[in-house]
Length: 134
Length: 89
Image (tube, rainbow over the protein chains, first blue to last red):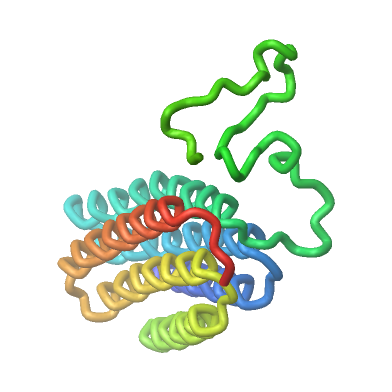
């Protein structure tokens, strides 16, 4: 019984990782590729680590497996956020079928400033700083 | 069980090959960084499967270290990219 559960977990985990890789190759732009890799690959690793925890069934190994799961769960969104942010700032092109880019009307790539869209005229006026380029 | 493990290793090897295709082709540097992160995640999965295959639990420590390195590499690359400003590649 436990063998069947273990085999199913291992197989589905590696299939999710394969799915992430296929998405990485097939999808059209940076953000959709990240959408494929972060979630599917994290789920795949989580399933594989659950299988290894069931296989060894010792306290130390289970603790290590759950440490890996917790680590992946905490770091995958952070890494995706940071890379997506950097990708937007360096001007990676969006897919031609993108419907809406909500950041575009509010973000100024030259001064690196983000507006909320709710400012009054007075608040929105730009105050020059010393660090501005000439 | 050993057949299942072999199938898993083949599947993840295929995933590594596909990821490598994106590393080579990827039009811009952020795409390559995403692919390299998927690389490290896949290797963590492979090490986990190998720990089950070889009955050596210490490989999970190596998996923790690999996950940590992949995360730090992603953060470092992102910092580097943001520092560089807009780029056209």
